[in-house]
Amino acid sequence: MVSKPSVYPQWASNDVQDPISQQFNVVEPPLEKKTDGWFLGEKPNRQWWNWFQRTVYDWILWLDQQQSQTVTTGAAGAGLFTTPNALITIKAVDLADPTKYYQATGIKLAGVAPQFAAGSVQSSGLALGVGTTSGNQPITGGANVVVTGTSSVIPT
Image (cartoon, rainbow, N blue to C red; front, side, top):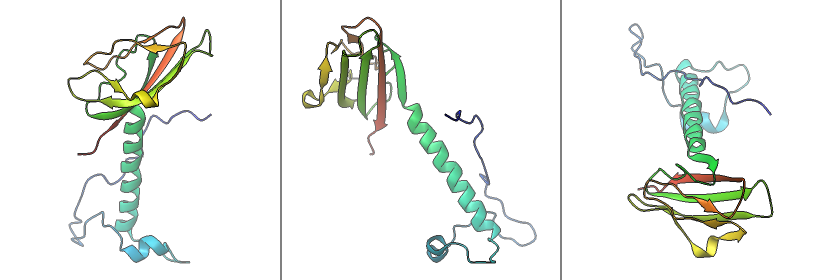
C-alpha cells in the first residue's frame, strides 16, 4: 500500500490579475470545454488549467477532511464523536476474540451524548457503555477492543 502523501498539491490558490494583460490567473472553462476536453494539438488555456488544478487541490483537501472525521481508539471510545450535528457510525471488534463485535448508526447533536438507532445495532458480546456529551463512546465486554467512529456533518 502506498503511504499517504504529506504534501498537498496546492496550485493557484490566490486570485491574481496579470499587470500586462489584465487577465486573472484562474478562470472556469465553459461547459463545452469541460464536457469535450482538449482536442488534438490544442494547448490548454493557462487560466483554465489553473482552474482545474485548483479544483483538484480543493477536492483533495475536502476528501482528507472527510477522512479526518474518522477516529480509531480503544474500548474507552475517547474522542470518537466530537463533531456536533453529525451522522455517526461506530464499529468495534475485540482483537482477543474477533467473534465479539459491535456496529451501529446514529447521530451526535451538540450538547448531547451520541445516540444510536436501535434498528441499526448489530452486536455479539460487545455493548455500548455510557456516552458523554463531549463525544466519548465506550464499548464494554471485551479484552482488547478497537473502536472506529466516523462523523459526517449534517448539511444545514
